[in-house]
Image (tube, rainbow, N blue to C red; front, side):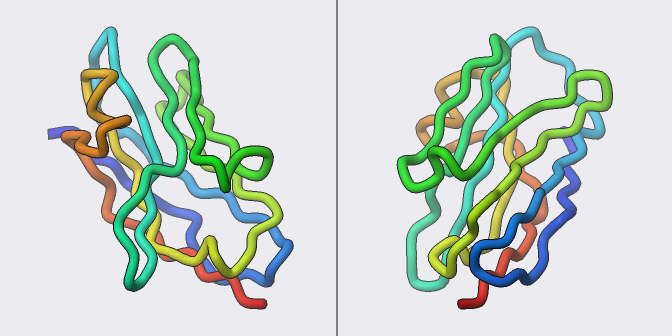
Amino acid sequence: QVPLVESGGGSVQAGESLRLSCAIIEYSHDTYCLAWFRQAPGKEREVVAIIYDDGDTLYVEPAKGRFTISLDNAKNILYLQMNSLNPEDTAMYYCAADPTYRACYSGSPRYWGQGAQVTVSS
């Protein structure tokens, strides 16, 4: 078990920014992927951003240029910085982790956070 604890969700106005945090309580692997997913009402869950052990990152097209995924290795905290938010970004956001690089891209990581609600008003 690898507990993932999320924080930083909330309600903001369109155009504003928000940063989500995911504390990784325990994890020890040489290889891994860490990711942020989101699910809006009436829509399927989708991956938003991925970061790998070598530092490479991947973003869904709507997030490019607005969202940034990063990892503080010293503190074991995963971040998702979200700028220029719009109502279409409203969703439940989940952080996730897996010891393989494929699981995050395929949408099936082994460990998940509890979720953080992000609501953007126009």
